[in-house]
Every structure is written in structure tokens, then in C-alpha cells.
Image (cartoon, rainbow, N blue to C red; front, side, top):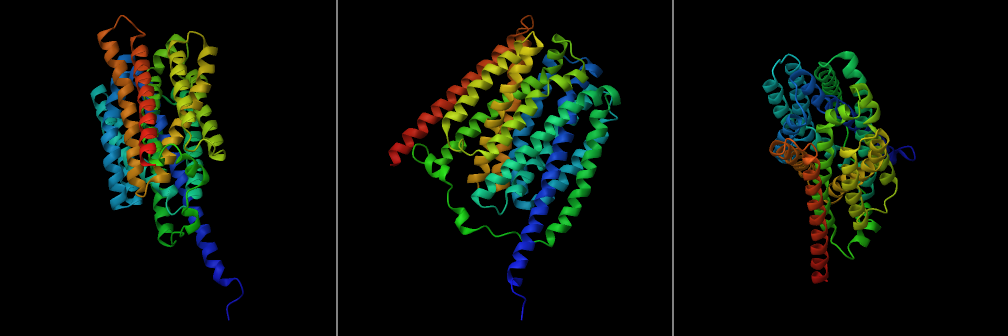
Amino acid sequence: MPHPGTQNSKPATDSLKVGRLKTGYLVLAALNTLANCYFFNYLVFYLRDRFGFGNRGNLWVSALYGFIYIFSAWQCGKFAQRRGYLTSLKLGFSGLMALMLVGGFLGSAAGVICIVAAYSIALLFTWPALEALVSENETHSGVQHMVGIYNCTWSAAAAVAYFTGGPLYDRMGRGAIFWLPAGLFLVQLILLHWLSFRRMTVMPATPDPEGQQPPPELAAGRRTVDPHGFLKMAWLANPFAYVAMNTLLAVMPGIAQKLDLSPTRVGLYCSIWFFARFAAFAFLWKWTGWHYRFRWLFSAFVALIICFMFLLLARELWVFVLAQIFFGLSAGLIYYSSLFYSMDLGEASAEHGGLHEAAIGAGICAGPAVGAVSLQFLPHHPNAGTFAVTGLLVFGLGGLLFLWRTQQTRMRTMN
């Protein structure tokens, strides 16, 4: 006769094993963020110091990266959904490590740009799969919890990477942007093989049927706009947040020169918005009142535009630092909205994660492209790129309002 409680011990054990697996996936997300940030965020300094690139050249490279990113995300999300998340990760990490090893030996700008193009493909075998892994087999409340942990994990790693990247760039040399990520990708591959073995011994936890019911905030959101309407609005807003963020990152060497900052000081003073974004994620994870509430998304978008202007036009360090705080908070809410709604409403998690990443790629491409074109045709107006990108952001805000009104009208018609 089985000991009392034996029947309940296996589900508890399986749940514990699944929890450990998800901890492993979060570690992969943190390492992936570190590697990506060490490479791409300081690539603009490498191109400046090694090949003499200015703002215009760095903006064009960022635009190329974003353009390829769009199509890579969409297709790689489908690949992960069809072939398996772990297969996608293995392919991605292997490709990324190989590209970093090759990049460390290249001596031409054209060669490095080719690495960037290939990198923007290999990278997208990782993010949609990781986003799906942390939220698979979760109830609605479980998705909220896991997306919160996931956002806090990668954003904390991004903040640490930008904060420490400048000093590492100065002390380890320019080649560190290749060798350091290559080592991190190798560690990820080793950890992934261990997780693959562990995953085969763990049965996925079955979601609680009661947990599949819409959470209170979802029901509240249905009174004015269909939940999928919020997903569309978030997918519209998030690319524009990346328009601002990636334009800022691409011209950071120019900002550093204007504010007289070395790469080490860039890491110290220009990573503030990364930490502010992490703080936003931590707060939004625990407080769910923003779920399916338009005013929060709209306010964040407005603040993002204002802070973007201050960041690129600031002549004083204290103004630059203060604007970063609100810029990071705004970007955090916009990003969180896109990923949360993608995971909360998406049945094919990796494919929805791929669409989420494709929208990010559109923003990564559009902002730097508009800035680069402005500087190309107005080379004697150094702020032309700033005003052009700001105009693009205002256009996006108008699109968000239009979509909100359209969704409200559609909801009233249905009722």
C-alpha cells in the first residue's frame, strides 16, 4: 500500500524539475544578452576607432542590421515553432560563436559589415525560442509571472553589459567585442546541451484549467477594446521605441565626443537608461494595473519622444543623465506591453515571439535609416537626424491614437 501523499509527490517533483529547467532558460537569456550587448552596443565605437566611422556610417550599419532582423525574426520564429525550441537555440548559439571567432580576425570594414549581416540572422534563432521556453505550459497568471522574470533577467544583464562594456573596451582592447561574446556563446552551448538532457526526463507541467480563464484586467480591457487590439497597439508602439533606442545607441560615439566622455565614462554615464528600464520591468512585473490600459501605453510613448529630444540635443551631462531615467522607464513599459500581450494571447508562442522580434527589427531599421538619410542630404545640419527621427516618432504616436480610435469603434459595433 503506497505511503499517504505518494500520489502527490510526482507532480510536485515534476513541477520542481520544470522550475529548474526554466531557471536554466533564464540563465541562457542573461548570457545571450551579455554577449549581444558587448558586441553590438560597442561595435559603433569599434567602427569609429578602427575605420573612422562617424554618426552617418554607424547609423547605416544599424539600419542594415535592423532590416535583416525583420525577416530573420519572422522566419526564425516559425522555424523554432516547427523544428523545436532547443534545435533553434543550438543552431543560433553555434552560428553566433562562429561569427565572433571569424570577426576577430577580419581587418576590413566590409568584412565586419558582412559579420553584422550574418549576425542579425543567427541571433534570431535564439530570442523567439527563449521567449517561448520561459512561457510554455503556463496559465495566464503563470505567463504574467514568467514574462516578468524574463524581462527583469535580460534587462538587468543589458544594464550590466553596457555599464561594464566601456571599461572592458578600454582595458582589453577593441578585439574584446568579438572574443568576449564568443566565450559567452560557448558557455551557452554547454549549458544548452545539459538542459536538453534534463528536458528529456521532465514531463511538461499541465496548466490548471481554472488558470486559463482571463485575468480580471483582461476582462476589464474588453469593455472598450478587444484584447487583440491591445496586442496590435503594442506591436505598433514597440518598433517606435526601438527607433529611439537604436538611433541613440548608433550615435553614442558622437554624443560621447560632445560630452567629452571616454568609452569607460560612456559605460558609467550612458548606461543609466538601461538600469531605469530594468526598474520599470521590475515594477510592472509586480503591479498589473497597467495591463490592457491604453493611458499607460500612450503616456509612455509621449515621454519617450520628449526624452529622446533631450538626449540627443543635451549639452550638459546632468540633463543627459536625467532624461535617461524617464527614457528608460518609458521604453520599459512599451517593450513589456508588446512581449506580454504576445505571450498572453499567442497560442504559437515562438511564432508570436518571432513577430514581436520582427516588429523590433522594423524599429531598429527605421530610426537609424531616417537619421542616416537626413545626414546624407543635410550634412551641414548636425541636428537634422535628430529632428527627422523625432518626426518619425510623432508620426508613430499619431498612428497609435488612430489605431486606438479604430479599435474602440470596432468594439462598439460588435456590441
